[in-house]
Image 1: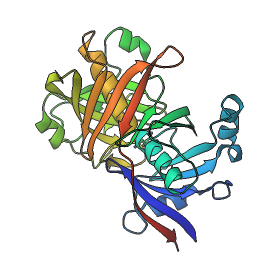
Image 2: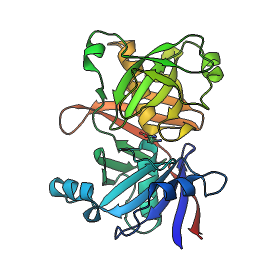
Image 3: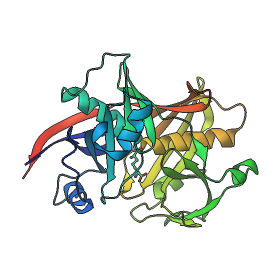
Image 4: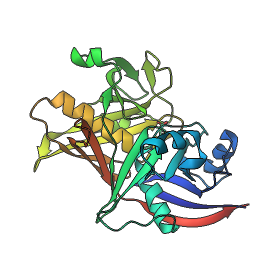
Amino acid sequence: GLPFAKGHGTGNDFVLVADPAGTRNLAAADVAAICDRHRGVGADGLIRAVRSEHVPEGRVLLEGAPEAQWFMDYRNSDGSVSEMCGNGVRVFVHFLLEEGLADLAEGGSLVIGTRAGLKTVTRTAGGYAVDMGPWEFIYPDHAAAKSMDTVVNADGLEVPRPGLSINMGNPHTVVALAELSELAATNLTQPPSVQPDPENGTNVEFVVPAEPLVEDGVGLVSMRVHERGVGETLSCGTGACAAAAATRFWAGAEAPDNWAVTVPGGVVGVRFLTGPDGREHVELSGPAVLVARGTLL
Ligand SMILES: N[C@@H](CCC[C@H](N)C(=O)O)C(=O)O
């Protein structure tokens, strides 16, 4: 008897459940069953929309930001918890609007609570733009030395590749490849091996910077991703931010602030700008679509 909606952002798809009173906290096995593509509804993740006052993490956020009325409880398709989902938070806000749980004119913003902190989502002409907050190197010493911090291997790669680990609220390891043909040949039906093994797992992005890298002031990157707790997905918003941050870092001082990241499911925009706290923030922009409503039997 659980009502749900199905939605996606550039093919990264979600089951969405409205739970304003926080009475529908699903067990990991239930989430996995719902996300099963053969025996369930099928999705990369499940998103529960709960009023912040009804979850412990939400209550903490409310203390400093009473406007953060809604909390995004994000689960991967295997039932595991993730701190953040960039495509998911756009679809989350679209779901709130379509359900009549929030109101937002074009240009207006909503502050959403997540396990990775507060995210401000602005309604734009073509979708939503999210202030994802600052990005960080997971191993800053390696970054300072301009060295990579991990070695990544996957079936189909010509040789194991160095990776750069980036925190977008959730963990990412970005690997650069030279050719689109090698990106296409990489087998992501199995998780890539990442050494040393990250304690909490990692999402892994394989990226090919375009040649030329910049067109009309916009940096161009193609990406495929293997998501922690899911497998290969058609898109990953936090992954696109990590991919743009890594490529911009590798490109050096002349690299632009605006990026277009092409994923199998479409294109998302990434912009680097100074946030209200004076730190460098990442903004993710892209579409959010609802495709169906239903009831679990
Ligand atoms: N697809 C998401 C990221 C979802 C969570 C990820 N699998 C993790 O475990 O961190 C996105 O759009 O950011």
